[in-house]
Length: 468
Image (cartoon, rainbow, N blue to C red; front, side, top):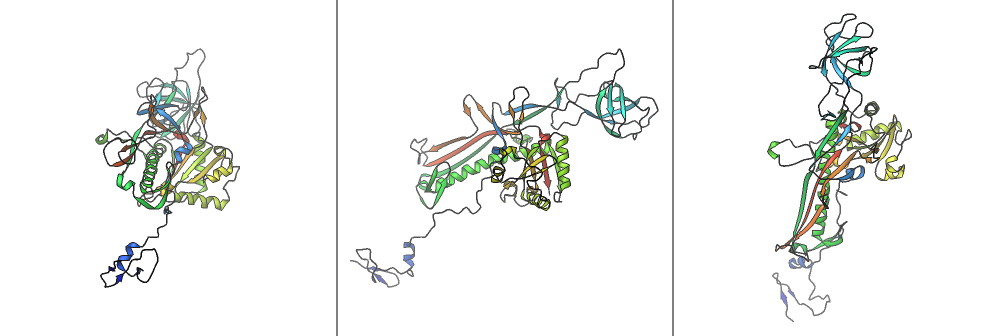
């Protein structure tokens, strides 16, 4: 049997059997032998950053519905009572008509695009004969309303107004009075809120060559859709799918209306955060930690604008810790008769989902730390301050008075028509791996596509908390 000469002058004699002898033993000190050693690579793939998926918020508290057009809309009932802002005259005289300038008409509605049923905007709600309540408690009787300007002429019930002159005040319309044998007043057209938003197209792809698809890896990977195995491209496809789902969630949370004419061909959706900030209620804490007085102000404002009695509070880590410190000091978690209606009145279910619950003033808050606000590669990147944000989302369910159908607080809309749905499309192309080849390219491509948008209802029932 031939011997093997090494560059160092050392001679090795291979044996015909797999038996270590003094002649065939390859020393670890031999440079060429290092490549012959089998690497000790653990098959378990360590998830250094844990479960990196951030999806779940919209899937948990929202609903889904098909959309047959890119733009979708709905109408919401406005307040049936109205207020107006009027500027008082420069002086008042006893038992005479006081002319108040109309500063702003009904401005209490929370949505943009307010209209009356006949389609006209901002109809003046004041009519002759109406009784207006001033902030100081004085009552004024409307003798007439000027058709062009909308200015209002009032007579004071106690003879003269004692309010400040040349000052803007908000008057509430509390009723009306008419003399004997007079005609009926003009009608008030009901007001509605118009909500519109659009679907956007989100895409993602993953590609692997035929050669790489057959390379064996040293660790075991798991994929919820395709099972477990030792092929690297399965891990890559799983990451691509998870990232795509995260993009879908983030765009429905952070999306903004596109008004840039330079990219007018792109349709975007106004996401949950913009929806609350632009149309709902908000509280800016500045740099201060949240206090019980802040919670009381939130409860009062929610109650004023008919907020839900049960709210999911998705908080960034800074705000979440501040709330923990505040409530722990008062022993307020799960106190005051906290209810768990959203979780089938099961406290354990709320805890298993990571919610901590507390009640204040008849309102129950289910707090959950929202990881995406502190994600180092997303909203928690350097310079982003979302870790102090919190979104209070209504968790109750409204019902249509006529049909009895449930009305969610928020909803995912996706394009679908004639049996073709774009809620979640996935298909494979290429000539590698696939039994049925689609082209001559030596690869496998995995494609994802969706066309969806965010839809929110009754923004007056939402609350955004911001801490810088």
